[in-house]
Length: 229
Image (cartoon, rainbow, N blue to C red; front, side):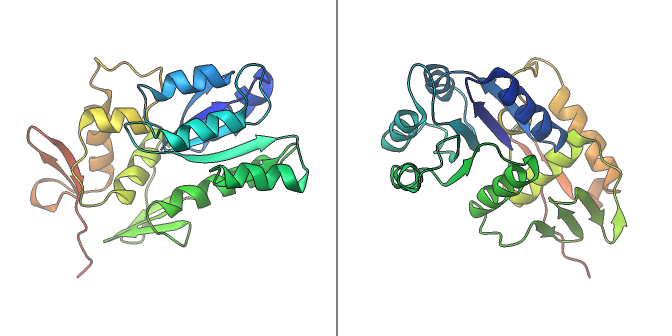
């Protein structure tokens, strides 16, 4: 999942981004409302952590513009982060289109939990545990298993498997995966997606007809919902 952190407090924004990257998210950071709107013109995001108070365009206006004119890649979830704790302020933020509201200072664990909840809404998932065929992935504990066997995954492999499992059965192109699982530092001209899919596929102990991730020639990759017999 790809997240945009928007906050003019540079140290806080970088701290949030670092924590989220450790949990396997692809994270980009900007420090103004103008930069956020510019990014959304060409880059789809699954969620935005949006500060309310910024020197140019504030978070309320950014949220209003996103909801009135959704990006071509789809409207992201919006989690507002702000020091404004008045009830009226929170109500206003939610009424104009924010999905959730977190008051500063906050514990990173709560931020992480709220992000997991918001991202689950898009897949109608009530639990932090994803299940597809023999695969189980606990997003809160960062544990993935295949047929009960724990998988030793890198953070990027875990993030890639999470994305495949939330889009099981869908053909996902390399470009789509690069946009949603990698951040702005990824080189679009490398084989990073193909290589990571290959290592993940091998760790799932599947090849040929038994592969859980199949290559759709000319289109991309698809996670097969192969039920345990």
